Image (cartoon, rainbow, N blue to C red; front, side):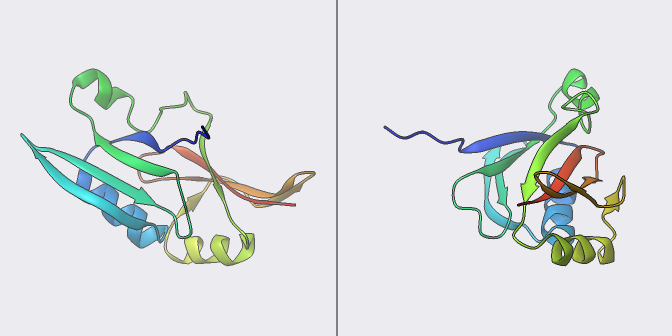
Length: 129
């Protein structure tokens, strides 16, 4: 049976602020927002055109979890957002206030630039060759 990653959990401080950031700044779609009771929600987002993998916005429930918001990868790039048009997305993100940590660069594998989400998690915006 084929396998694929269905969802990746991303710790957030607040569901609504995270939904606003990802939908307004990055143009992601809100796939699902289900109230689970007791302040918990099942919130899935995905970039446009994503067929399988979703991001689960998981509100930190403990002080220990809250300490990891924005640093789930220990300061390294955490997520890799592939695009078919780097310059289109780079310029759109900049215009919407997305913070890039570096200028775009050409690497043997493609064009890439690191940006941060609203919590400080690092992402690669990447167009493969």
